[in-house]
Amino acid sequence: MTDLDDLTSVYSSKVHAVRAQITKFGEAYWDSMPNYRASAVKEMIDALVPRVTAGQLRIADLTRAYLARCAHELGWKLVVPPLDKTDILGARGVDPRKVYRRPAVDVYKALSDGKPVEQAVSEGRLRLTQLIGGDAQLAKVRASRQVMRAYPDAGSYYRRVLTGRENCGLCVVASTQRYYKEDLLPIHPGCDCDVQPLPPGAAGQQVIDEDRLEQVHKIAAERLGEADRGGRTPDYRKLIRVEAHGEYGATLTWAEPKTPKQGGTADKA
Image: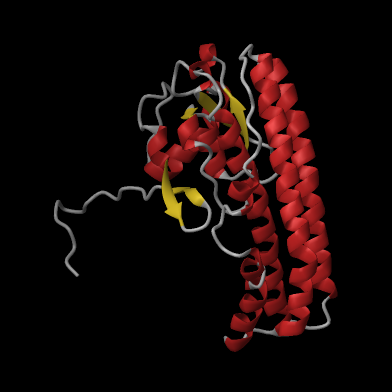
């Protein structure tokens, strides 16, 4: 696993550099806009969308090369297919020009709600950052799916690798588990997790990261009121669930904790 971890580390840093460069450009452009009227927003979209799409394709190329190298390190012979660029750039199913108008819409909405201009602009800026990050992650996920479909049966499983930059509790819980490649990497807002194929010897059990389980125990105790050091109960996969998002596809979210009934009867509305 050491060689795979080294590969993943190098890959992760390169992908992050692409994502950070686009984000820096977008935030700087947003901050420099004289106003947020339609003409100014159109100019921003004209400048930003080509950079976002170029970044998505660069991330997809890096992902393809990375997963091909992982397969080589694991001794799997495969022909890596060319990337389906339409699948990557069309992941949202929405015209990117419409997508990147949303930060301005957030500004208009905030102003109509009576919020100060500074707050409205800040909310739009945050939305812009989230959109760029989401498109970068979608490119990673779509490219990973394309390449891993070509993996042999021995390469049917993967793990979610934490980068340490954006990882929340959802990521920590998910990173302790083994996943099947056909269900590759549900994401969430801000997600930047990486994919790493699991060697057959490491894919034999559901829990694959015992060292991180201690963190999961704490999360389980907070959310479910119980934690088992043997890892048997509660079922940590029940801490999170996957929902369908109209643009992001499979999306991670917390499962609602069960609240015990009081007195054995449910409250009536």
